[in-house]
Image (cartoon, rainbow, N blue to C red; front, top):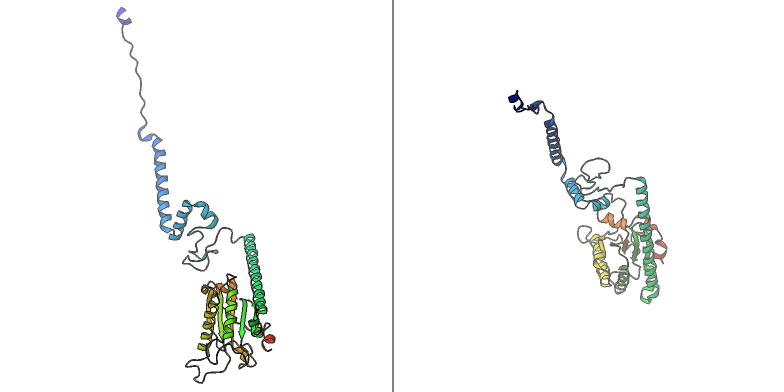
Amino acid sequence: MADEGLRPIIVKRIKKGGGGHHGGAWKIAYADFVTAMMAFFLLMWLLGSTAKGDLNGIAEYFKTPLKVAMAGGSGSGDANTVIPGGGKDLTRQEGQLRKGENDPVTKKSMRAAQAELEKAEKARLEELKKRIETAIDNSPTLKQFKNQLLIDITSEGLRIQIVDEKNRPMFALASAQLQPYTREILREIGKTLNDVPNKISLSGHTDATPYSSGEKGYSNWELSADRANASRRELISGGMDESKVLRVVGLSSAVLLDKEDPFNPINRRISIIVMNKKAEDLVEGNNNDDSSMDVSSDADVKEGLSAPAKN
């Protein structure tokens, strides 16, 4: 009995296994792996199917997100499909639309802003017209040629026309050589044209009297173009910035001032147009519809020209 009291007590502990493949911990890790792989392949697919412009736009967004959000970055709103809002140019050079441009309220605000700009531009041209008229009245030299200066506002901007009279031609007969008083007129006009930022269009016109050589040699087309270019040089000599000239054309007798008498001397003229923004955009090719742009439309020719010219 004494030996039994000294016998050590043995405690058996049973260890339970982790359950082998019947456990559930590995499922969580596997699910995370599959999710990560799915996200990776989805990213690869998106990168492969996204156009270069969109990728640049995304990169720009993460570089300067506020700038892109406010003004749009490269690829932001690009026109790579025919989805409405993409514009006509599928090469992504045009058609950028910023957020909210299709909104009616935004469109209305944009139209109102455009109308205000056009109104301000028209007022600026009206002021220029008054300054030129004042300069003519205050100049003894120019005042005597007042009947040969026709100034009006047209759909293209402020138009200044210098016309011939029977006994007072602007150029030497059948030549692009300016008369001395014509030089003074053009130089005086050139001084005032720098006061506005608008571009200038010059066109030369002749009457219907043909050259003896006909249209095959040197004709009224070449003569009208040479006279327009001679007028351009004189405007620049008067102080006008040469970069203001956007177009110089010769129209021969295609646009007559007096349609009833094609041989009337008033058909021989130089037309200077201080163009408005719409006309500038049309000339520079920013609008595909050039049909609305005419150097001297019939409506403009009839508008307040015949009375002063025939005095």
